Amino acid sequence: MKIIVVSDTHGELDQVNFLVGKLRGVEPDLVIHLGDDSPDADPIVSAGFKVIRVPGVFEEVYKDFEVINRVVVKLSDWYVLLTHTPESHKNDLPTDPKPEELVSRKAVDAVFHGHTHIPRLEKVNGVVYLNPGHLKKSDKKGWPATYALVTVGDEELSIEVRNLSDDSVLLSKVFRR
Image 1 (spheres, rainbow, N blue to C red):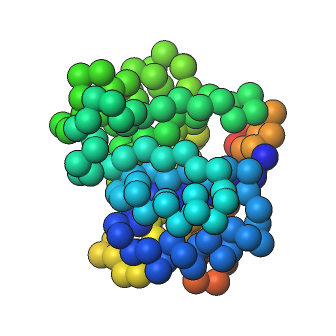
Image 2: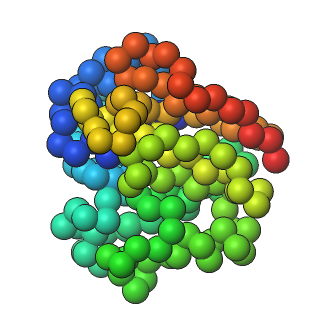
Image 3: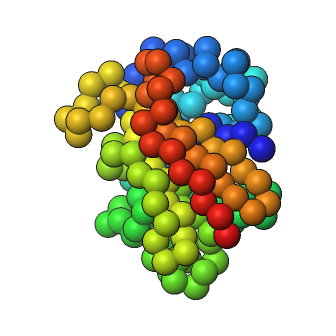
């Protein structure tokens, strides 16, 4: 299963549309948008790709009890938390699952998050953490626009964080159970 993960598009739809062109070459099974700003995934949906999105903590819909802010999905045999922040946030609703609690209970194998705009690939206490970075043209954090390509197998997650402009691999790791 091939998955593209993006975060922190912040209204830069030209960057999202540039990504859509790349998606046609990859043909992912799923695209995940981790918020700020989740409606930016609309062009990806319009292009015919399956999308799961969660809102960022500063999006207006994050305060809507009818919108799911954090979701656990099963990707092959991996339980993955999709969330904008890797930990609880002051804007969370009382019904939002707490990432720290899910991790401590071993209810998830991985946490896919955004928020910091800094790519992250690491395993902490047996849990894989992925932050695909951001898709902004320029950002104060020192990283170019990036996205993640995740290949999911029963026993491993192979993850590459790629530069949006030229697809060069900036970070790469294979995580095994």
